[in-house]
Length: 444
Ligand SMILES: Cc1cc2nc3c(=O)[nH]c(=O)nc-3n(C[C@H](O)[C@H](O)[C@H](O)COP(=O)(O)OP(=O)(O)OC[C@H]3O[C@@H](n4cnc5c(N)ncnc54)[C@H](O)[C@@H]3O)c2cc1C
Image 1 (cartoon, protein in one colour):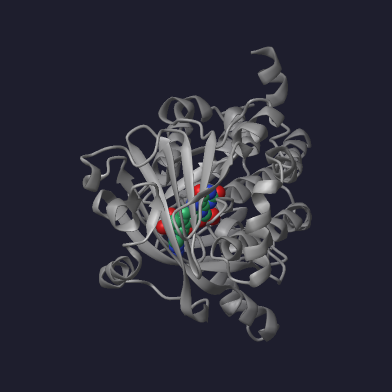
Image 2 (spheres, rainbow, N blue to C red):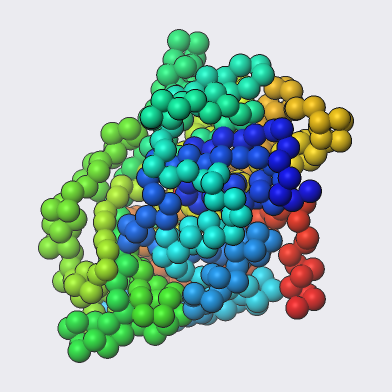
């Protein structure tokens, strides 16, 4: 029964896309949880995020969608520019995808907006605790105890590490297994590689060099391709644009030593690349000058090779376990798919145990659920991480054959290109304990 508090409790590290989506899905299933987020919920970092049609379907199920729909403009047109500023492809792929996906469109919004829309649907806000970092955990056959950075001990039955690419929980697991399995421990520490970096920002959709004229119309995306760097701008929210400058880094780094960039380093990138055109009549520098908030990050890539759970009650999810480059905007969407893959296995187990007189799932039953989640989700993670890496290199025209493909691209129909993407999205899961969203679409 939704809202009831069973004896089974999930502790979630990280209150971002995965943490909050897990929390809302668990609340809707009537399963107890607490989210521990070391910073604030929905911080303003200038980051943006896309929602693709198959993930919109999940957000519809969770009741999040109406607020997102009201605050965004669906993306419909994509213009591709070459290094000389020439438009070489005007693409309707987004419209083709929408037609094939029951009129669900791709949307693009501030990441903090998406997070606040999910958070707003969580009824019991006392279970989402900001400024509460996870410091350590211990697990036994009977449960798991998580210690926060203020020394508080929280007891539960399952512990989810969804605390991002620099995951504390992944680091703790690596430490614990270091003696028994040094190779797996090392993979957990250094298994993600960064070759590209990304300057990202939210800017006003008003070009300061053109008297405040919009950079691009609402619902439009501009892509620009240079040798070794590329850019994308999306007007997904009225009055704002979200943009990215992707640059091949000087050297390849691995976690935990991927760089953190200072403001000066970010400005140096703009000083170097800012004069290049992005779309007609504007440059990266124009976008920068119109910024509301900007930052720069390394783009790590990888899918964690060792098992994603401890063989006990601790499991990794989201960017903590699979990290895709940003160009096609799939990382958060993949992360939501992961939530669905886990929750669809967990809910029937907890409900069965409730029906068995209110017993708690055993450790072995929990491990079986965590292994099934990984079995279902790992192939999606591999697909998204490799496809994203390919798109990053394609847009920066890294190899001669990618440059050749770019020349061919306008000759391939939007429908054919859309099909590839739709085939992937059609495999996207939805929450099978909530009404089938496609039935709802057909009714409305
Ligand atoms: C610039 C940029 C643009 C992107 N654009 C897109 C896009 O358009 N589409 C898309 O699908 N994806 C996009 N992504 C990827 C997407 O943002 C991530 O895949 C997604 O945020 C992963 O969610 P997560 O919950 O796993 O981790 P994160 O969002 O990284 O959240 C981890 C959370 O854990 C918290 N935390 C860390 N340590 C602790 C601790 N010890 N205790 C408690 N909490 C802790 C952090 O504060 C954070 O809130 C983009 C990423 C970037 C960087």
